[in-house]
Amino acid sequence: MYNQTPLSKDSIHSCSRRQFLTTALAGAGVVMAQSGLLAGAEMRKTSRKQRATDIVTLGPTGIKATRLAHGTGWNGGARSSAHTRLGEKAFTELIRHSLDQGVAFIDTADLYGAHPYVATALKGISRDKYILSSKIWPRKEYWNSPSGGAKEEVDRFRKELNTDVLDICLIHCMMDAKWPKEFERIRDEMSELKQKGVVRAVGVSCHDLGALKVAAAHPWVDVFIARINNVGKEAEMDASPQEVALVLKQARANGKVVVGMKLFGAGKLAKPEQKDASLEYVFHNQLVDAVTIGMMRPKEVDDTIRRVNKAL
Image (cartoon, rainbow, N blue to C red; front, side, top):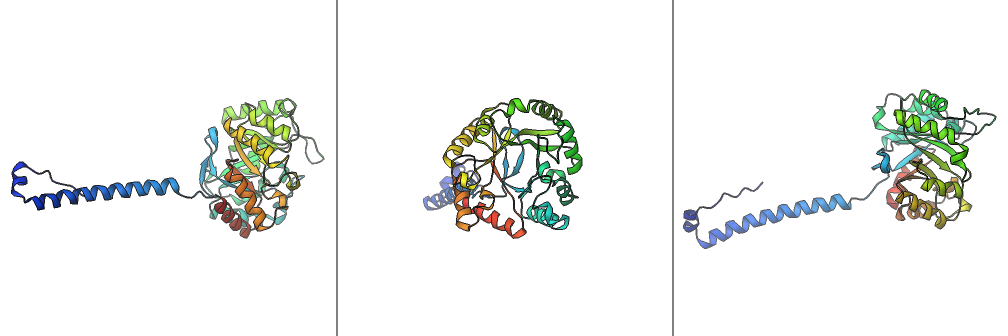
């Protein structure tokens, strides 16, 4: 670093005018160079391209997760999914590959039957190195006997996932605007679990525009997952892209964390140009805080990261 020695009156008089100007200009040159370096560094910092694996803060929740989440429920139902049908070994290799590439946000659900697979895949990895999101299926099915609340379900989830805390827990698949009343007990118990620190953030996943609009404004909701792409109902959305986009923008303005799903339309947007167009629409319009994509193979992880980076 340049340190200029202060010049005394005697030394100034003993210097020639040329020597004095040379010294002063040299000092000014270093200061300008340093200023230029700092400005350049700041510019590089502020203009650095965003990436899929960036750690982002999920709104007021304070949860720090990667922008891209690895979904584990492709063709999921009745506690099974295409991911679990890969088998434990392939599932573990897939999730480990995602983690190695920097994807540290795992999206799962009771519906998918993936909890034990996720626990195996994450075994030995420090808990502060990843974020876990899961979902309660609230309806009685041949495979599901709900408690009517959330405590039993969340306790079971934590055992299955081998974790003390769920970062995000959602009520799964809201189908109409009446969900806050219909699932009031679940909401109350999830709020209690949140107060105890067992769950860090609560909310819903939505499969209906009315449900989505309620979630965007409801004070109980911290996080919600919404179906969004640039095509609309033909690609598994609840309404047109424009209608959904307005809701998502309002939700974010309300302080809600929005996680986008079905960006590739559950496989209906399979062509490279279709995937790119959807990602660009979602990210360029700033509709989400993060996205969850059900990548099935390591090469799909690599391809999705590359495409998200391109869109950003």
